[in-house]
Length: 90
Image 1 (tube, rainbow, N blue to C red):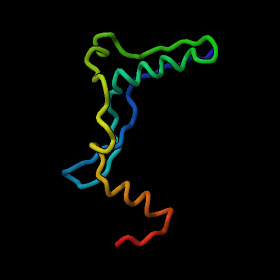
Image 2 (cartoon, rainbow, N blue to C red):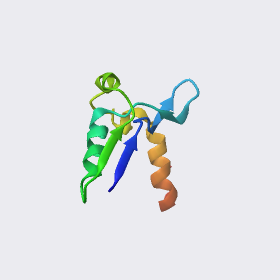
Image 3 (cartoon, rainbow, N blue to C red):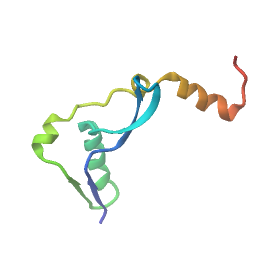
Image 4 (cartoon, rainbow, N blue to C red):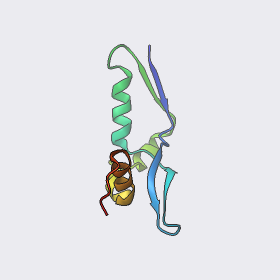
């Protein structure tokens, strides 16, 4: 029987304006992510989902996470696309 236990503190890409650098921050996962994980527990066979935080904390979670394009500068995407293709787009 699959068991999914989560503390809902994933590392999320963001941008530190003060240091002008991309960072990984530990932030509370939104409620939508929690519902998705709960659905995975019993998808193929009986399973359990345990959230390791209180119901009061759950009520404070955001419904949705902001899109990554709003959290991370586009330079990272440019470098990811340009690197493997070896294109010179300057």
